[in-house]
Image (cartoon, rainbow, N blue to C red; front, side, top):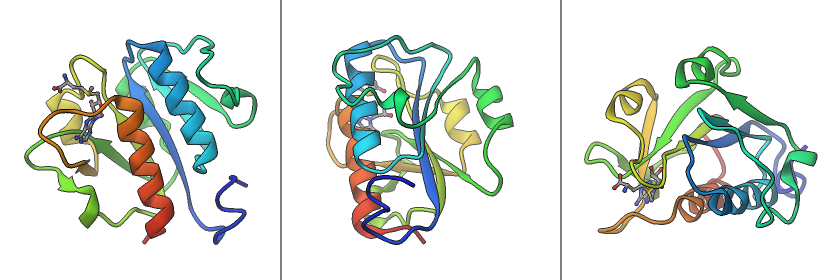
Length: 155
Ligand SMILES: C[S@@+](CC[C@H](N)C(=O)[O-])C[C@H]1O[C@@H](n2cnc3c(N)ncnc32)[C@H](O)[C@@H]1O
């Protein structure tokens, strides 16, 4: 059972991960937030995660850390009846403030330099964005989404 759900209702789950990450400090920060904000698992796509000191909770010792070689491999291994939610600044994206989090969700973040490719955005079931004219740090963006999920609860 996740840390936050121990305090709230124990229904549904979420995982969070990043495609082709380029900065290990960011990813360590993201994992630390993921653990504290109730993720059931974390993952990388297209790049293996090496240990990073910014993850002081050593999240990979507490919840599973999966590595998928490609986005297709991630899709093949999605848990049953679980929605893939892309987090990206895109015109078509739903503002986070209006988004109802699915009970079972996988949140996918993009690379620090290039973001999530448009082809991948099309293959996700939901696309959400945070406010702002410029992009946020990837770990900050992921942490805000997880915090929002905790505040609102899921569907
Ligand atoms: C630093 S951003 C990538 C910026 C990239 N240079 C671009 O302009 O597309 C890294 C990742 O953080 C997330 N992100 C940052 N700001 C965001 C925002 N305002 N809304 C949604 N996602 C955001 C996205 O997942 C994005 O792929």
